[in-house]
Structures are given as structure tokens and as C-alpha cells.
Amino acid sequence: MWIALVCFYGALKGIRDIIKKKALEKNTAMEVLFFYTLVSFVFVTPEVKNALSLDYHYIGFIMIKSLIIFITWICSFRAIKKLPIGFYGIMDMSRVIFATVLGIFVLGEVMTGHKIIGMSLVLAGLLFVNLGKSGSEDKAKPVYIILVLISCLGNAVSELLDKMLMRHMNSGQLQFWYMFFLVILYLSYLLVTRAKIQWRSLCKNYWILILSILFVLGDKALFIACGKQDSTVVAMTLIKQCSVMITIIGGRIVFKEQRVIYKLICAAVIIAGIVFAVM
Image (cartoon, rainbow, N blue to C red; front, side):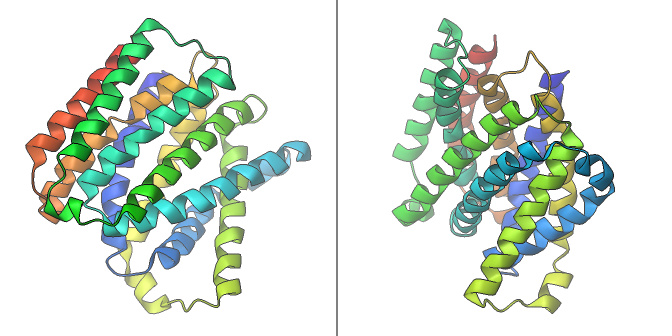
């Protein structure tokens, strides 16, 4: 059951990455992030009664998760805006490494022989895609690669917190407070920096609405999966990387990106690692 939920999340994640890049063609990263989180929060407001019943001791931990994601999303959105989406999708799989290390050292998850082989293949796939970058990818400033890696680390920490928090609450409670704090954080950022918001352009950017719907559905599935006792952070992170196939193919169809076969081969090596790891 939890594997199916994580696969569903992964498929939506791949579609979301493509939609993020489309949304960023019309607005800045901070504009999209604020409106995206605001609309997503509106969708989860029916959970307010359920959320208010949560023991207040856990709300502080959700706030920490939101702060991590606040920084993580700023990094990932700025990287998506500048990098080819297929290349970004493969680099985003670096989160597998961070999640594995955290799962082993924090949650005490066992590093089996299958997982060692799986991790080796994941690292090989990431190495190949970086060695074989095309012109547009090779011109990408190193800062955007660093932003992707920071976002991968942040996502891995967030996934670890999800697993821990879902032992003490339900998915509706986590989703409500998580989104509530994100809205506050992005709004505060815009107010402090006095950033101008193009409201007319935002309201016409229908990609944000689609993005918000997919985000709420995907996170709901992921949080339920985290609540399952037999699910592990390492396995869930590996399974979610099925999203890369959608990202690479979408990059070709939507953005006319090149070298799709090479990227698919690199992704296939990483997917093979995922299969070994969860066997």
C-alpha cells in the first residue's frame, strides 16, 4: 500500500517539476512560491478542526520542517528556472544519498547488501550525467548545481521529519500546519524585502493552480505512506525517483531539450539502483 502511495507521489512530482518551470516563465520564483503555497493552504483549510486538536508540543517541530522547506523551495525554484528540466530532474535524485545517510544514522535503518548495490548505481548514474553535460547544461553556473544539492539535503531532512512526525499525528494535521507556516514565511519574506508582486500576472498564471492541486494530492499520499510502520525513509526516497522519467520526457516534449536518450540511460542506471535497494 505505502509503495503504491509513494509511486503516486513520484509521478505527480515529475509532472510538478515541469509545471514549475512553466509557471516561472511568467512570474518570479518568490511570486510563484508565495501564491503557490497560499492556494495550496486554501485547499487544506477544511482540516482546520482536525489540526487544532493536535498537541501543541508537536507544532514547533512542524514549524522547523516548514522553515527547512521554505529555504529548500527557494533553492529548487531558482535552479529550475535556470537549468534544463531534464538535467535538473536527474540531479535532484542526489537526495537519495542524503536520505540514505540520515535514515541510517538517525533512524537506525539497516544498510543491506541490496541497498549498497543500489546506492552504487545511483552514484554512477549521477556521475555519468555530469560527465556528459550538453552545451546548455555545461554553461549553467555552478551556483545552480549547488542550489539543487542544497534543496536535496533540505528535502532529505524534511522526509526524515515526516517519518518522525507521522508517529504522533495524522496526515491532515501535518499538512495543515506545514502549509500554514509556509504561507507565513513566504509572506514575511516578501514584506521584509518589499518585493513587488504582479497580482494581475499571478492571477492569470493558471499553472500555479494546477501546481497547487498536484502538490496537495501528492503530499497527502506521501504523509499517509510515512504513517505506515513498515515504510522507511531510504526506500521511500528511492521509490520517489521514478519522477525523473516523466521530467526527462516532459523536458523533451514541452521545452524541446536535447540528448534525451543519454539522460534516459543515466536515469535507468539510477532506477536500477532503486530496484536493487528496495528488493
